[in-house]
Every structure is written in C-alpha cells, then in structure tokens.
Image (cartoon, rainbow, N blue to C red; front, side, top):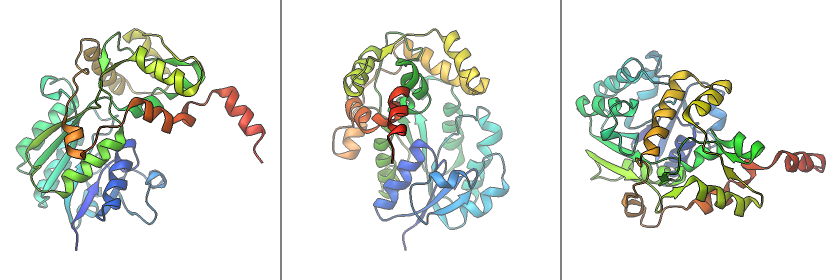
Length: 298
C-alpha cells in the first residue's frame, strides 16, 4: 500500500494544488484543515480530512496516525514559529515521519528576519530528512491578496517599486511538491522555484490590460500606504509586517533571480504570467461586468 502523506494548509492556494497533484499521481493523501468549513475548499471528493491546528497539539495525534511524509506550510498569520510550528515539527520527528517538504521563500537563507528562516533551522535540527521548496512570489497573490484592487480599482497596489519579480504559479509548486514527496533523492536539498522570466509590475499591468481588455495600472504605493490599506482590510500587524518586509527586499532586487529548478524538476517550462491571467480572468471581473452578468443570469 502507498505511504500516506499529510498536507497541511490543504484548503489554501498551494495546499489545494499539492493535494490535487498527489491524488492525480495515485498517492494517498490526508488533507489538514483548521476547521471543517475549510474542508469545503479541499479539491478532492471524499478526501481524507483531518483537523490540524498548529496552535492545538491535541490535533496532531489523529492527523499523524499512519503518516509517513509531511507537506508543511506556515500559515500566513503565524509569525511566532517557535510557539506554533516548532511543536509540530518536534512531534513529527517523534512519531517517525520520514520526510518533511517545507514551502519556504526564495532567498530565505539571507533573510533571518523572515519566519520561514526559523522554520528551516528547526527542520535542520529535527533529525527528519527535509526538502525546502524556496518559492518566489506567487502569481496567485494577485487573485487573492491583491484581487480587490485589480477588480474594483484597476490597480495593482503592491509596494515593489520598479524592481523585477520572478513570479511562480502555485500550480507549478504543487506539481514540484508532489514529485519531491514521491521520489527518492530529494532529501536534504533546497530548490529555488521561480518562473522563467522576471517582470516589473508595470509589465504585469500590461499583461493584465491585454488579457482583461481594460486598462490596469501599477500605482507603486509606499510601504506605509500599503500597510494602512491592508490593516483596513483586516490583516493583522504581524501578517502586514511580513508582507511589507518581503516587498521591501523586493525593491532592492531580492525577488528578481530566475532559477532553473522548476523547469528541471517538471521537465517543462514554468507557467507564464500571461497563461495565469488568462486562466484566472474571472477573478478580476470588473464590478459593472459582474452586475451585468448577474442581471442576465437565467
């Protein structure tokens, strides 16, 4: 029987894609979610669902029963990884998990102020074979965190200055994760996952304008304006601080590196920004278009 793989954050953008890729390859998956409401977002019918909460060690017990490998994600709202994530790593080591694949951030080895850096250090000290997937900025951030500004204001409201970013589609991350979880030879390795081209946000706005057939601009907000708007939308200061720090390093070129690992691991080119915007176009439907379509729906 195939080994059982636990995927944390299974209802999120990346977790969903990891689950889909593993199931498509015929593997047994247990999907970790914080609430049963989140289970509705898991993309597989009759999925093996488990309640997994980093802040509640009692949920570890049932979640890890029979599990051999773990896909680990840091929930965006968790900044205190020592308190909330280290116990889960310690527990995984104690029950004999054979591999932990952790979704990290590209260039994290030079960013000790980022929570992912501490998680990597805890994993290195755990004694469990690990694989780090150090991903660039997700294209899907534009259809989640930044969706409202694009859909309602035709504006990419991101404090990245004029720097370039080697975006990656989370569907490619899911495919890579499934591969390194199911093949030998990826233990104790770190992969930099990016797209094949680094783009400025002005260039991203041009792609959006072309695909959506309306003018999308990039307003280059300051970090202060960005932080204030995110706070108004209900994000915690801890979450805002992590986002702001990442965008600040982006302004200095930290996100522009294009790595070959994605293409090598998938045996194909990474998905492009143009393909992503085409596939997700309904997410940024203009409000007047949405109203028109609702009024004509039968």
